[in-house]
Length: 112
Image (tube, rainbow, N blue to C red):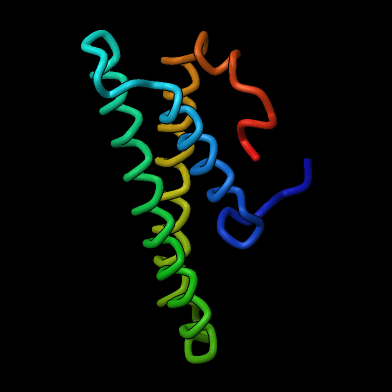
């Protein structure tokens, strides 16, 4: 698989859409799945918040590049973006592990 940029190439949007589909399969009214619903909903909020933060960081990097010949500004911003991406991917992997039986029932059409 070719290297993809998290925001520009829609990687994060794809993860968000997948989490939405998974969330729609869990009832918030069933006492047995209430915790799971809140867990997945919290992940969705975190992913959306992370998307906004990454978009702002990328905008800042683009603006800073013109006036940052040493990388003094861009390097920390790139590092912050990488940390956000790593955290989001870690949460996504945790979601896959924690609800793997339920994910098997979701088809590609559900993700479209």
